[in-house]
Image 1 (cartoon, rainbow, N blue to C red):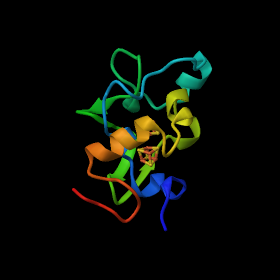
Image 2: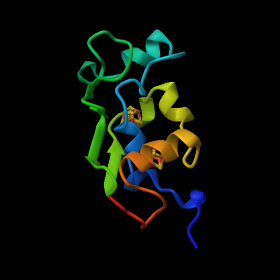
Image 3: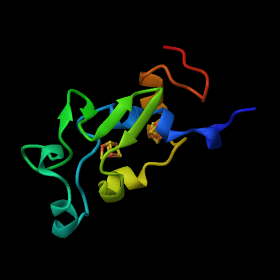
Image 4: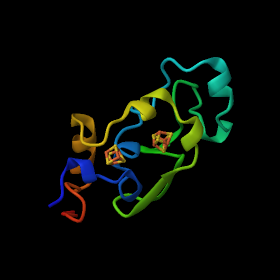
Length: 105
Ligand code: SF4
Ligand code: SF4
């Protein structure tokens, strides 16, 4: 039986594609932000660059296979995202994703 503990971010990517307001910078040091390739940083430098609602650093197809191209240096908000929390489930629902192997949309 599947559960929230089975959520696999690498077959999801919904929270990285939900809103351009989500991958915002917060408590990162200047040194940490300097590590991010400029092409992935928003013009106003307040967060990750997005195309529509999708972070430009997300690779792959949402709901199938995805990866973060800056995983090791990703923003704090991305590190704090917890699979199965309210934000996660809201993002997954927006893409018709509920639990693994239950792709509704
Ligand atoms: S929406 Fe949840 S399961 Fe999907 S990538 Fe984000 S944290 Fe992982
Ligand atoms: S930086 Fe990576 S983890 Fe954060 S929103 Fe973009 S693709 Fe997702």
